[in-house]
Length: 154
Image (tube, rainbow, N blue to C red):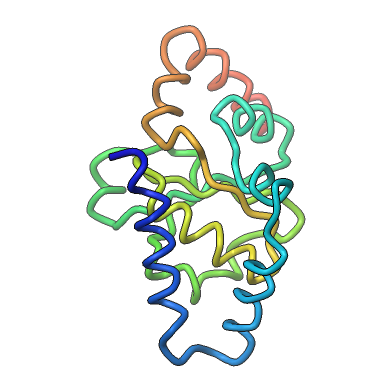
């Protein structure tokens, strides 16, 4: 199933941008796709370890793009909760001077959000190991150390 995600994401993106869109959105997606290369491929990804370091250094914002019902059941207090369908109208909540890391459990929605944010001028990445990978990283001692470090930043 892991290999189906890129295919599903590509199909969703093509479908989403084949309907009439705001002026410039189709051009931004076309530019993104036609300039895509190996560097772009690397730059679109962030691991949980990288994200934790960026958060500790105040270089990134984590955006949980799951649906509200999912966000209500479990998540991370340090993430901004912006469901994918609300992202276009809530762009002003995201800083342009930080890396925006999008996350969901399986990367389908986070890939869509990352591409959308990139076409809107944000430096965006998706969390490669998803929210489940981040939860796995932030267990036990790691959770304690991360929590304490984030508290000191406040």
